[in-house]
Amino acid sequence: MQLRIEQPLCHQVLTLLKEHHREMFEHSPPESVHALDESKFNAKDITFWSLWKDNELAGCGALKELNNEHGEIKSMRTSAGFLRQGVAKRMLEHLIDEAKLRGYRQLSLETGTMQFFAPARQLYQNKGFRQCTPFADYIEDPHSVCMTLKIQQ
Image (cartoon, rainbow, N blue to C red; front, top):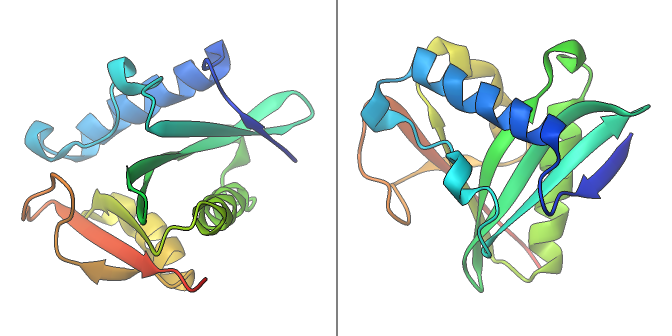
């Protein structure tokens, strides 16, 4: 599989992100959806990567810089045809490695509390992420859980 930085985002990645956004609204109340909308896809503080296999988009993920020591994982998504093939794990490992390269001391994320999000929460836990209090602009929300990873340099 091949990782690419997406800038600007190609059509396939935009389509996958729109699908991701739509699905978040299917499984979470609107006030609890924190997926990036299209207006934020090319923000200066966000870097998107895509993962490809033989010219097919397998998944994507993004890293948002909160400050020079703290990053946030955004828009992790696996294409339907690549579920349970290690795409999310590969993307998460890449985002953690990139956070280390940037010198971040902490990497955080927000995800849902519903059963739909259980596989994602398990993946993050398996990589060392632990539940934490809300960070950045997040607030306490019964439909949302924040997780963080302390990064050793």
